[in-house]
Length: 115
Image 1: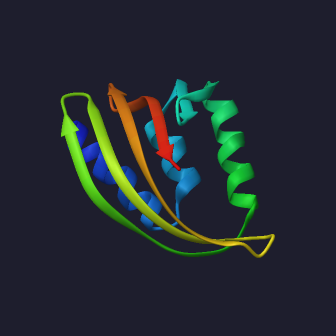
Image 2: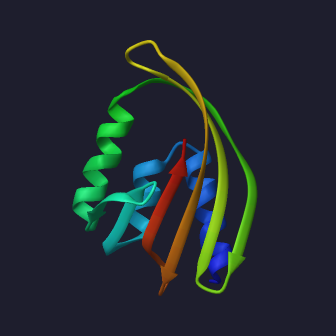
């Protein structure tokens, strides 16, 4: 599969509500992830735990939309709009961009940009 096809599979998995299953399939064991290029998290186990904590903070997921998807070689950039109510009652409509680096069908780096 091409990087474009892999990135699309990740998008479809997330939109289908299969975040952890998608993570398990498409992220490398040594993946590096960060939020706004700070506090890098290294390794699949550490990043999976971060995703579990994020999911456990959600009361209701109202939906997501994907904007532009740009693929260039082993890199993909995806615009997301998310609508979430957290367990503290705070409903957030957030926009973020993710920039992924792929190798051998797995994400080896993913940076999230949001404000």
